[in-house]
Image (cartoon, rainbow, N blue to C red; front, side, top):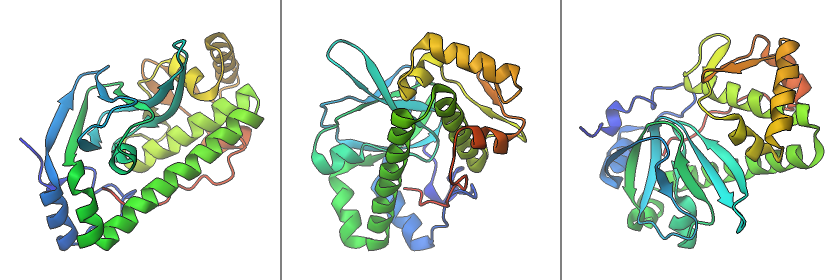
Length: 242
């Protein structure tokens, strides 16, 4: 059964801003259903003009682009609470793809009603703009890491960001979070070869900075990992949930 917005399980996470009753009622009208998908399911495809927008309720995925020769650049990991498809909603076409890494449950919204949100609920429109600006900021930070940092700094930066984000959502324990991705996914996100990624992770594990196995990331000292990754601001700001 479809979950009512008032009972949304991730809305109670301290990472997300509160919604008043009027906003909850509007989002319930905006929502047209839910979708459950298996690992590996394409959610949005580059070049497509999908009629749906999504919010991830549970599970994780990947945003990525493919070159004509098949090489892949992972743009970002997808976590619960992420809003998907805004690009097609505004520009009529996706320029990247989104795929489920694990089983996922998603809220489904009618893209044709997107501008109704801006007209009828200006605060929600601002929230959507905030989400887009936040993604732009993250991509700038990611580009700087890929372009200027060493391999160990890139990996430390990425794992620290993932760890803080998943802890903020409430998915982690004291020093662990779920990390159901492959080393190839991390390599494709950071512009590294799989061999270089594997060797760098092994050195970091030997120094007891982190360990990553069986879909679990263990970070005994997140501050040390952030120093290694040259993370400037470790705070995960409260954000709107669309």
